[in-house]
Image (cartoon, rainbow, N blue to C red; front, side, top):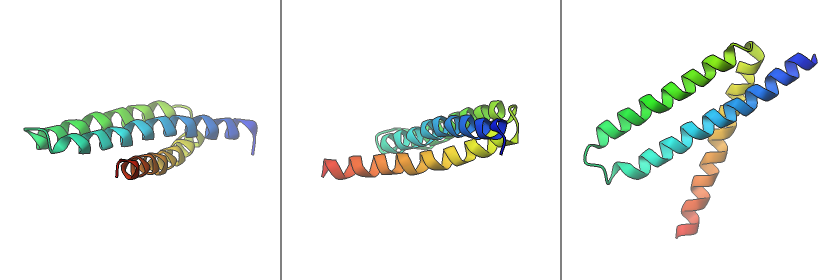
Length: 96
């Protein structure tokens, strides 16, 4: 592997980690507010559109760097999913 590939994978991973964290933390915040909202369907729909637009825009910027950053960002998004899930589960266990 050349240094360009490694740099692309690393910065793509970091970008994906940030995008995924925002996406999944936004999802968690939406789920927390659904029961108290008067129009929960609209809340879920607007939240999804905003989160999807953010991730799609971020991935568009990442893919301009080539395919290696895109591959790295996909792994970053998956890692963010695991990290946010652990954060949310651990936070829920502390409340009990």
